[in-house]
Length: 292
Length: 288
Image: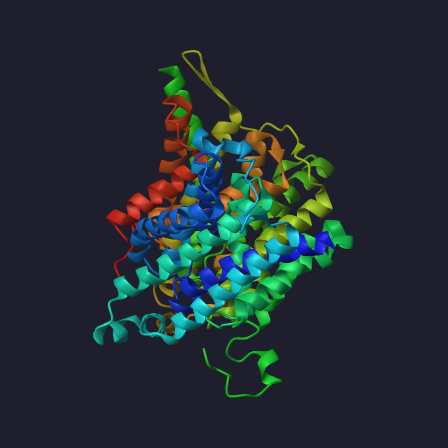
């Protein structure tokens, strides 16, 4: 049972991070392949603030939000100058540079990583596996609400307009820089919160936890579920997150299976399971169809 | 002084192998506009096929030839089965499918050939030089000569032959080119074949240079080559070659000689971000 709870906690945390990516990629249409970097920045800030600065999880959370927002702005600015394929490669670059910083600077523990991250204490009670899962699910719920709120508000609508046609949108007075940056910062902050949850779940983090393959995995969650949809990232995280666990008896073949499935999915259902023209939704005709 | 010259020579060899990988990537990007991450998978497969045939036959030329042809066909298969049907979708769709192919290829090779690093020693049949006590090994000479030959052939092909000109026309504007009677499907196939065959050659050369092949050998070049084609200007083959050679030398000299405390594999990306800040279209890129 504890195994299932651990897996569920991981999937929940990954879904939170994927929702952050959903704001950047899904709503603002900025392809990001470096999301694991921000996930990592959140996790490392949480680890450093709780072990070296002696803060509690709750005390560290506002600091993490501020750190991630600042880093989001700093990384967002170079990303604004480029678009499409250039942007994808720039974000890959950000991911590699951030991972290299964690790996090469002794302050971040180097290749050995950081350990001894304490459990989260809530109302004087140490949160063990089950209750920690509840905390993660609660935060996931909040993040989904933020996604929903964002997509209905002026900010989100402006981002969607920019995604669809940047020139038309900016001629209507929508500032591309402002709204892309807002989306980028929101996405990085959510990733940072996910990162801090990850650090407290693992008690130990290393640079390789936040490498480029993790970014690809996060992007696959969003793409598989359907970009810019409300439930897509969650569905993607559940399917792709539980698949390697279900395929554990196939041990050696599971990564191959994973990549083949991902390839088949994107080849035959590129808009995602819940996106436009999806097979799954065509079985359930409703007014939700095509509503992003 | 010897040390510096030696580092520059080694750096040129590293840069040449980067150039052989990234020029294919630039060629494919110029024609289809797809970021072909699986190119590094082809490079790794090429190295493995080359080693496998070399250990069976003992003839490196035969091994290289078979490996290049097989990988060329593999490239065409990836283009026909995956990229072509996905062109009408946003660019991230072919990109993710390309990353999926790459991971799949890595895993497949790991299952077939085993996860361990395979070593084999082989000296290329080229002369070696000795200059004032400094030895330039025959493998280094081989890499220089082969790379230069590939560049020359590619240059001749793209400027002097009709097919080459058609290929350049297609990379300028595919729609206009096909309306002028160029068989664009054949051009796309051909460019995938050429770039994949060159990538396989690069894999074999890297395998010979370091005496090893491993399933993970494609991981670093895969993303470094992306940075290189951005620095060179997406789709510009000369840009990719110049950027690759410069990076190879810079990496080896800065880290091996000057001991700059920078992570080697992040250097390309740092250079890329600096170049993008200064020229968003890359060094040799066209504006717009």
